Length: 262
Image 1 (cartoon, rainbow, N blue to C red):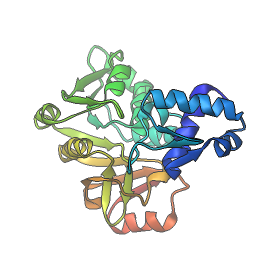
Image 2: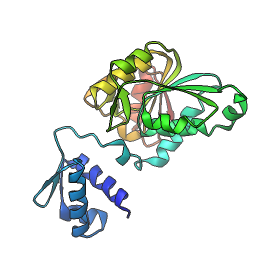
Image 3: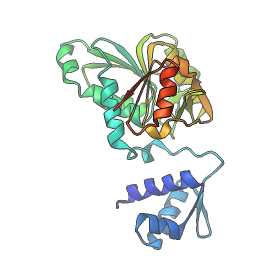
Image 4: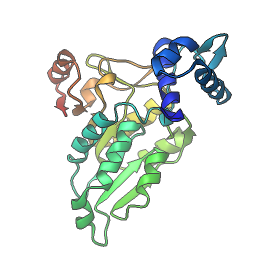
């Protein structure tokens, strides 16, 4: 197992339990205790956790795993979800993408659509509006895509730009489709993000769109986080994987949300 894979696994275990012991981590990852101690020391140096005697704890009550350590989680499901979302986009449309691992896969799927490349000619075949720096970095080299990036204050956890500068740009645009990356969605309570600034920016992006799509793997279904993005009724389509709980999906359908499983 590579160091990055170990670090991702360690942070996942820590996020789930709030506390991690060296010996249990070594057993779970099938590596030596010395390797785990070294990994925890290095993660502590990056302020990703707090070292304790015999293990580590999270920094606080709420824990948000940084994007760079979430990219390997449920990758296959996210790619299937992304392909389904990308297929909903027509040539010439304006698409809004929030930050997140699944929306990043959506951006990649859009960039690889051959029909958009062929339709582009000398003009962009698609316009993408995003507040995510990593998505912007991937799409800026694609000549078939017109890229619009909001201003704002960058959050290192998610690479998203938020705040009044981002809001100022979003208020001036109209979107055909907004694709939301989320931290939780509950049939009765709505759509959530960990951070209030991200939730506010994503809410505005959704409000500027004719159609709102939530793209998320099944691990987020039925969860809530700190800040609400929007009510369930504001979502037109939920795209998730087949492992999502059927009872929850039925409640989304009852609320008028189109449910697509892949």
